Image (tube, rainbow, N blue to C red; front, side, top):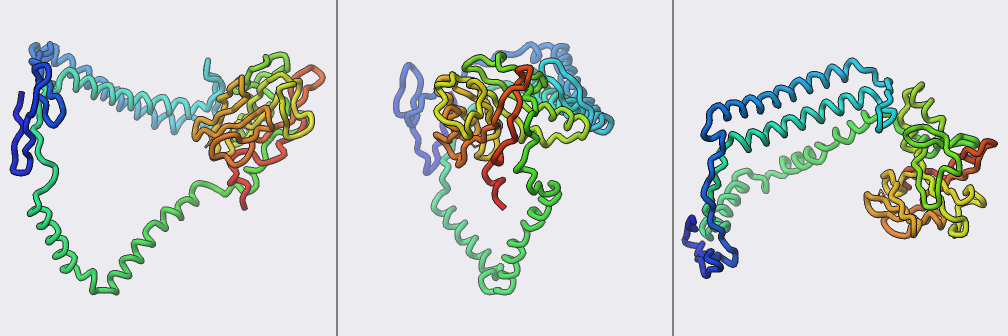
Length: 350
Ligand code: FES
């Protein structure tokens, strides 16, 4: 076992032992085990092979980044493809996302492989010193700081001091101004959604119309308006999805305590916005027994059996409900659009 260094102010002494191990300042010190050489330590061919493997991972990562740039430039931003399991996605986003993720993964894997196979793996014990400086050193630093402050004239030269403070205060302004590049202000568009009377409710992300009989009591379905697909495919507008996403839950009609409007359910099926009214996280954590909807971001909880009212957490406003019914063929449709803004309450300000 390595010895602790004993400085003038660091007088940590081993003061006991337990099961044959030293105890220092209440901490049991375990002796190091004998170092075992790896195969790469003794066989140069194995070490060379490991080196080639690491280099291959780093080289592949570089290729992924080059392909990322090519994909970003070449794949049109309005090209949507149907990916098994995931559903309809933007081809540019999924390709660049995959390539970038793979590039990071390869760098990480290569680094781990390098460390495990080739870097020195001998354990060492670092001697511990007292962290606190001596009183003399602390005094010297204080003196040095005071001398520096006096030399700079910061206290006496008021003009320089004031203009410097003004310059520092103005310094963050460009950061605020640059926020303008985030795009045009949304204006009233955050207050409305594309839900309207007669719009079919379809599954998200497979765009399948839903019959009331498809949803069992206790079930939850993530859904969007059917007209969303056309808007995303033809106009390339992907902003409506966030506002229009809803969840459908079904409970026994007798369990419904209250709703935001008379008869807004269909045979116990209730539709609510999926966007938390706190700061806008999408929610679909639903507890069937209590009818509570729990936001994973800051734990706001909404009682869907009681008008979507907030029962816990920082959200200040209930979850907006969408009135629904069925068409002549029994498919669920909206009775009308949302009657209040969806999402965070700050969207309503202005
Ligand atoms: S976003 Fe839902 S609780 Fe904060």
